[in-house]
Length: 576
Image (cartoon, rainbow, N blue to C red; front, side):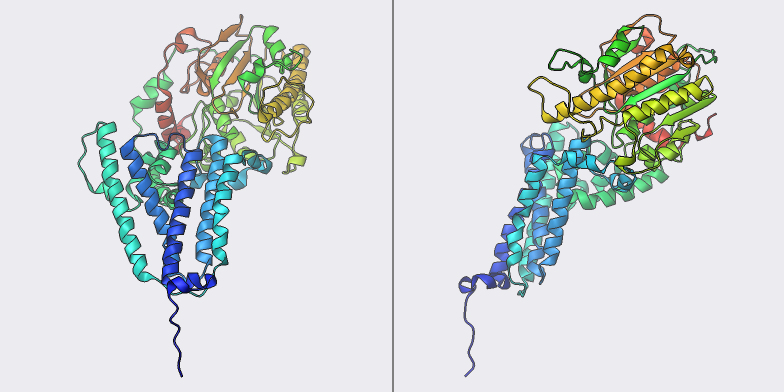
């Protein structure tokens, strides 16, 4: 006699739940909630003010996150194996963690150019783990809640009917989100808009991936949609960026030449006195220059003594203008007077461009680099006008130079190279994760562990720079030398860098307390070495010129926009 299994979905053993249509629907709901919690958690942890734009924005953002969550979870309804769901979940978890760590590092999110340049950062792998903080760990922990799902039985009855119903709901969510975005745009942006097809995109793959929309704020797309959609959006955006590269807007002569080439009094002096030595102290921030140890002594006594012993220009509040390039961006700004590009890093992506610079004005020049070819230094040394690159042979952190070795090489170069020469030295000991110097500095209570470790490292960097400064006081080769000391970038959010310049052209000390920018360093160096007549003035102002400080020719935002065009179009390729 033939028997029939009349067990209903409700009566299935626990191990068979996955095999029933009802069970699949239940797991679809669970996975939808799971993905929704993940993408919303990312916004709460890593997107400041993500849900603070008003009701219309909130409704639209939540609907967008619900739509993408259901889209990802719909895999449950139509696949027989567990691995597609496991793969999607793993990719999303890793993508969230990487973006969270990168946000802690730069305040930005991962782009395709960030992925491309990762292999070029020799010796800095350990620094990445510094940014594995509690919120990243929390996101990973929540992501691992999916693991119990994979204990379920593999064989399954598909549920295509449910799948199509889900996608109808997804489309409804997306279109409803468009209505809310329209209401937000008309109310908060005060724009007269028509309700066009731009508001009817399922996941907004096309319109909002145009480069300008992305550049207006990397968090904008994630706020409006989700971190999950940011991954496929990245590649579509890269495609549109490639189209823009081919048809970039014309750079008008009046935008550049009349403003940045013929600005200020022409100084025809071309005589270079002594050496120009630029020391970029890794992650040097102004608060460290003012910090005291537990005994009330300066954490950076050498640099403070240097400032107090001679006429110097000291700018206390230099705003860092790095983007994705960290030290690479710092070198770009200081050497060329240009600003970082909006996509990628200039020293990686546009290393074949021509950059204006002050180094080529000297008969001899060199860069002392402690980490072999970090930030594409081998190529960019020549692009910034330097004739010689001095760096270690090894590529691991154990084979890099410490700051004492950097100073030894710097002194040797200054002593042996033909004068006048331009020498730039880069320190490394205060690089994250602040573990290159053994603890030894006694500090007051109340400092975070990260800041205390940083001060311990910057104290060592200061002692090494001090060795060079004391040697330079008596070295014959350093007579009439100009010495510039500043940070390549900041490391703690919202902190500013100091700028210290000693030069024969500075007869009395000048302390600048108002906000300055890294782009001001380049024109100030030109003044200090007597080369104000150089054809490219830079976007910043000459800090040694009182009148110049009071009349910036361009806003910071406009300078970023124009600099991006100049670099991408190789504007200086035809200049002498």
